[in-house]
Amino acid sequence: MSNVFVIDSYYKPLNPVHPARARLLLTQGQAAMHRRYPFTIILKRVVEQPEVQPLRLKLDPGSNTTGIALVNDANGNVVFAAELSHRGHAIKDSLDSRRAVRRGRRQRKTRYRKPRFQNRKRKKGWLPPSLESRLANILTWVARLCRYAPIAALSQELVKFDLQLLEHPDITGVEYQQGTLQGYEVREYLLDKWERTCAYCGKKNVPLQVEHIHPRANGGTNRISNLTLACEPCNITKGTQEIEAFLKKKPDVLKRILAQVKKPLKDASAVNSTRWALLERLKTFGLPVECGSGGLTKYNRTTRGLPKTHWLDAACVGKSTPDVIVHKGVVPLLIAAAGHGNRQMCSTDKYGFPKQHKQRKKTFLGYQTGDIVKVMTPKGTFEGRIAIRHRPSFRMGKVDIHPKYMRCVQRSDGYAYQQKGVCHAI
Ligand SMILES: [Zn+2]
Image (cartoon, rainbow, N blue to C red; front, side, top):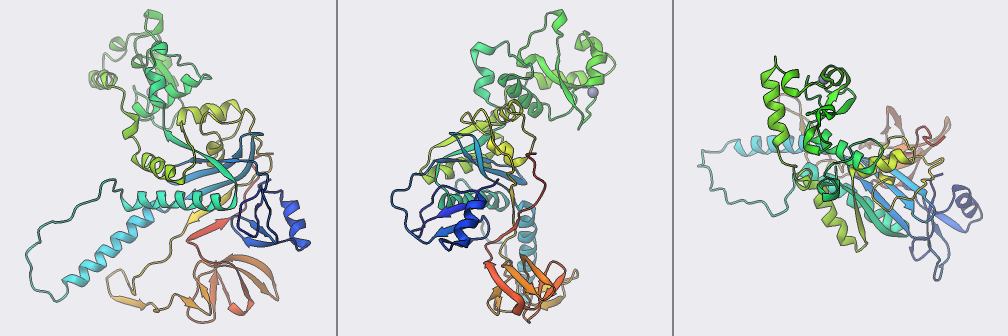
């Protein structure tokens, strides 16, 4: 099971406990609920010198979803898992719309002005706002989890493949076979270099095989420069032919492949600037940060027989991964970045005419859009995220509810939560 976080009355994180134990503490009145998402209880006493088991927070940053897992390295238990969805494109859209509104406003009733000298400059380490928001989301959650759990180390997937492992002199005749760690690194590297397409026919989204340009049968080596990717039909048709003979009728394809082969190993560091920026900022937490590669993650996941999900990928990041990952009953908390609303006071229709004016206040009767409330109506009890109106009729999903039936469970914090889904473990 996903465990419940526990803090003592001095807000010191203690060992997470099984939900049954948390329920007992709550019903006996020894603890109270501190936070709904992630579920955290606060003890009504101080624990002097608690014996905590250190946990490792593992991250698999992705462009849409970041996997988060809290793993106990000593016994391999996954204590908590989450999947954090970012709002990369929503950020760009809202900045675009802000720009359009501003431009319209500033150009209204003004005389012509000469363009000003561009005296603006971007700071070093500047990232586009959509990427910055992804980083901010991850860092928010690292800080939050550090508050509720005894976290002693961090792990992050930094690169797709380990360049050092590929260039290592001992493995110049690279072992490309599936099943070895180098095999996974090689595959990840090839997938990246050949853009996940068959080199011969250009097909995408098909299972690809590692293919020798100069065939093994004719003395070709396993060197990474002799490898490419091909779909099964192409691989079989080529057989043991030389590439020049095989592509006799397609000289441009031959030219492209030979040019691609000669390209040097691309520097993996340039692949993803956000991940490197994330590493720099994770270091400021003062915890040891371990880095892993995508090839290693895949290798760890496959050797431990785990299905592919974002949170299990996160649990498999890095060399510290325990031999057995115990994840029975763990259901990830789905966290979606929802933003804090916008400042636009007048919304327009698609022609730019004013449609609706916003109220100056963001709250009504103490509620705000994004609050998670418990609703107790005569018809039943349920919980969810609300959107307020400036009259006593709030929206939850597609239902209108009067605030007199509501009790706030958690204040709006810019995220929407979902704790559901099938249990992947059984
Ligand atoms: Zn093909």
